[in-house]
Length: 222
Ligand SMILES: Cc1cc2nc3c(=O)[nH]c(=O)nc-3n(C[C@H](O)[C@H](O)[C@H](O)COP(=O)(O)OP(=O)(O)OC[C@H]3O[C@@H](n4cnc5c(N)ncnc54)[C@H](O)[C@@H]3O)c2cc1C
Image (cartoon, rainbow, N blue to C red; front, side, top):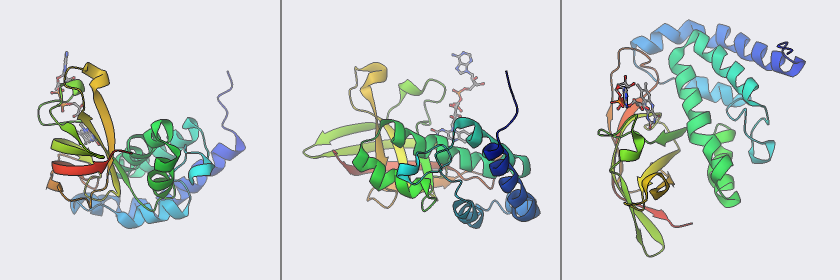
């Protein structure tokens, strides 16, 4: 097996490494100490065109593979674990599922701004009463005409207070087990969506970890 990186992979890795050494490493300790999410770093990552590395170019991504995405995440994590965490949550949790499972209309509306770095993404699965056993969740989505109405609390959600969209998991069929859980793209600006806590952690504090409340959040059925 050949483990040599291709020219393209080395080029991306080296340009992100250069950026990290020049612009992230000098502020890495400061943003941790101040518990500050570095929005400017993510603006620069968008300029470097790496906010959607494994997303198809058709949707504004770079069209890279998982190895390329891993190399970028590794370089970011090398200088700031918190930035690596928020970046990985944005790509793997907030964006990629829309490419894999969304409709073209949803990809155009929600994935493109994530892949270009206009918005950050988040994913809300964990709850105060369900972590490893994620299927034991209490958040519900009830159909009301052409809308779904979401209610519940989500816990430890990376990027929720800085995201342009949050993929919220909710029970749509109470007796349906795993297949009774659905994913909804929620706009944090929607009525009923509230970030109730941004936790202080033992580390990775430049990556926001949030509790969110969903009180009758209405999402269109399409
Ligand atoms: C920094 C950070 C960021 C996060 N970001 C997100 C996010 O963006 N979105 C999101 O949805 N969630 C997020 N999470 C939540 C994370 O996914 C959960 O913490 C994780 O699923 C574990 O759940 P829990 O904390 O409730 O622990 P628990 O499930 O209560 O587990 C506690 C301990 O028990 C062990 N354990 C659990 N079940 C068993 C079993 N059956 N047998 C043996 N041992 C077991 C576990 O290994 C663990 O050591 C984040 C968490 C952190 C710390």
